[in-house]
Image (cartoon, rainbow, N blue to C red; front, side, top):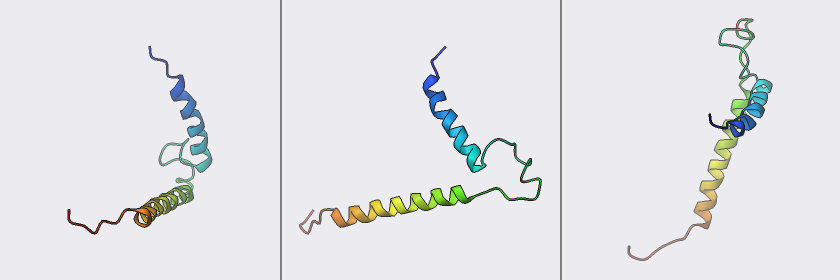
Length: 73
């Protein structure tokens, strides 16, 4: 059998983060959703905003620092 200790090393902290965010632990339709509360989406919104900012910064910096060629190809 293969040694999966390296996988467990990443999954255990990931499960803790997901539990803190509220994305794991209970099956769909149970808990907060059945009590009439919505699922917290703030973590997804923060992640999406950060991803867009990083992608935009990378494109902008590459445009500013990229080479300009005016000769024939």
